[in-house]
Length: 571
Image (tube, rainbow, N blue to C red; front, side, top):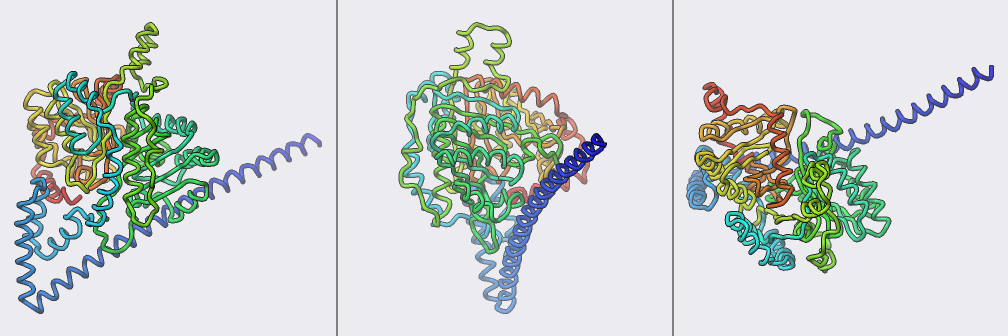
């Protein structure tokens, strides 16, 4: 009798516990669905409002032109003048051709659209604000001429690239910085959490997308704990990138826990000329000494908690040492310049620790040189040598405000300087004629040029557009690989066992011309070989489609791709 009573009590307790767990899960699911629903509703409402305003503006211009013929002729004259202005501009030829054809085919509509998004959106007021912040911040970066001289002595081609980044973007090259490469976003995420838990002074986080779900909650627990310990914590995210992931009260809920939070370029109804320019950067800075960047956002799909497009391939890097200073400056630029309504920093020096501090210890390696030496049983001195071989590191940022496509120029320069091989991985391949020519010329010179793109798309139209570029490249000798396990979101390049890049910059028009981006060049260090090994392992998981797209496309497919290519700069 007692046994049956005890069993019944245990069953009741288990049932109660199961019910509580179920309720909690259901509550989280409902909350998550509500957040996504509210975000999507806001996006749909804003898009419909903008389309309605554009439509009304077009109808108004057309109506006025119909009623007053002279106005219509004036608009026609203005469209011709605009075409001539675009033709004589310094924009890349691919972009100019698209706008010229659109305006000539539909003068009023094309002119309206160009004035809204073709001018690249920013206002003079915003340009002045960014210029003022940059004038205060960029001089706080060192010139590091002695490090640049070491680069010149090591390799003249690399020196030219380093000099370009410093001259055009304002970011110097560093030594005394340890680079750790992560071949999977989840590895970077776990390392990030461990380093965040050690923060003593401040934490800066800037991401294109944050999803208010499990992965973010894991990070938020660490951030809240550090905030309670007196650490200054700042989080900055792009509104459009996070629109389907978070609710409108995310900022207030985050700030309640002592975390400062700001939103870049809020997405709403109204003809916002800055709407087309988004913050696509991914940066974490801890105490100005440790930094992270790479391709992954702070959302579940980047860390395999959900897999809507098969296995998600992403990568990242960890920096420890002097070069983190550039990541700090990049974050402070966006935090202070993005809005005139927020209170700006008055003292930047407190976030920029003294340079040339010794790196305390070699960072963890993702199948890197130190791990290899340990496995092979090498002596301690060799391991120390590998751990101190930091090489050269140059984090940099790209902005649509300065009309200099730094991200594209870095990729082109690496391709033009390659002697043996240059490999790229990108989620989207929508490139200018200049980029296509650089890749094709490198292949014709006998360089092993390869590009990895996704095997499973996240956006089907963009995927079709990506494939439309294959033929022109493969006919020149470029090899194209599609990542068959799923979607590759990494944005990287490696060349000649000497130099590599990792960051946020896709090989597409949006990244190269419209978004705020960041990348990191690293050279002559073990992380370069880690990057190369990851490429080699990734090639083994890909299907090479070079031959098919060189000879095997049908006429219908070629025609469809030609039409898509016409509108590529608008996507």
